[in-house]
Length: 351
Image 1 (cartoon, rainbow, N blue to C red):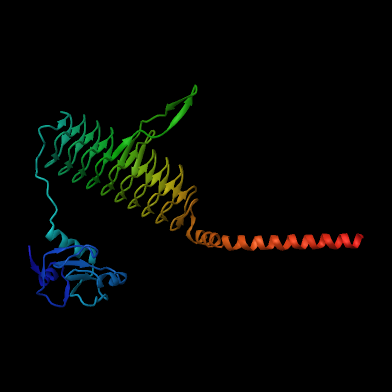
Image 2 (image 1 turned 135 degrees about the vertical axis):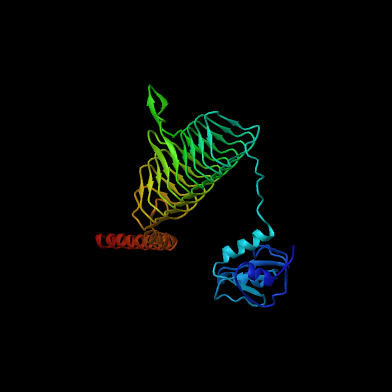
């Protein structure tokens, strides 16, 4: 598939600078681009890397003019480049199989219009599934679950009983929604599982990453708010209430009964203790250990997590410790010399 750079500019509604007749055969990132590819640079810090890039052209935002390469200027570089990539490498579309013969569906389950159920999926008693939802192979949907329209459950997702999933939700492979919470009481020297009578509710437009687990509430619901995006390998414990439009990155662990406001961002490997309240529009840096409530609008980092400015002061002090150690040794040496001199003087005066 070959198009001209002019064609690419028209495809993305961009302004062309340079030779529009250059043939374009693909699209790739700066690191991997080859002759014939168009690439993108969405910030000035990438201009140095473009100098060594083998691409034939580049897509840039207004104000960035790379030297030595024809370029196409657009207002939204990521969106434009996505169009070009999709043109040369169109996403694979599933064949509309309807309901596969090997799927196991309870006679009391209700499926909406144009629902797709792939091979070996299992749908339990009383389940309802909205229109145009796709259930991939190996998915297990237990009794009483409710799933909204245009939702996609990728292979081997498990929904425990009574899970509620909104519309346009994506749940990636291997995720487990509604498993028992990690709660025990000690009875006669043995750990006894506490009540597990709740469920999980996922709002509209939520995305759950691969191998992520969201545990059910003890008596009520664990809730993931509308529009929240959760990465792979995240653990959200029982009774949590996650706000709307949160971004939760990989390997975050949130202990039970924690709440978050809207538009919270948690970077990778954040750990949050139980019964913590996190305000709206909070940002928590990578590997932070959150032990206490965080007010709205704050940025917290470090272990234990503290306000960013306070953490920077601590880090600056830590960097000075080697010099302070040397100074302390020098002071100790001076004090020892003074003590010895004073002792000698005292003995001389006594004599």
